[in-house]
Image (cartoon, rainbow, N blue to C red; front, side, top):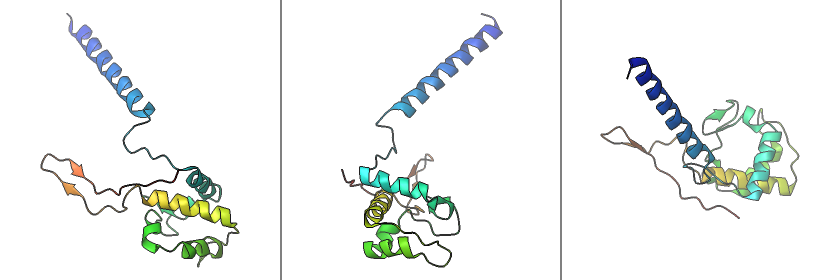
Length: 144
């Protein structure tokens, strides 16, 4: 076998393994880390996106920097009435929104389910001797 043929076989093998791996990982419903939001939380996520909340706020550190990261705001505040008031009244540079009660409930459910996905920042990590990082997770309980 010539060296160029060996190179071609090795390259084709790597490409096939790469494509197969990506198909399995990205098309599986049971992929690690996939979060399925309840219908109400999906409505809240749509409101989050339609009102461009991520231009000022972050989830898991991704988004704007004008407002606070809201990844764990639900468990930090633990007062739904306070959160509902914040949605409409705005504070400092936050604009005033006019969400109805159904929309506020959907936003609360979205933040609750985001909160259940884990901690941010996750300071309770353990680095193993083999380089593997073990993260502390929350046990999610989603609404149907």
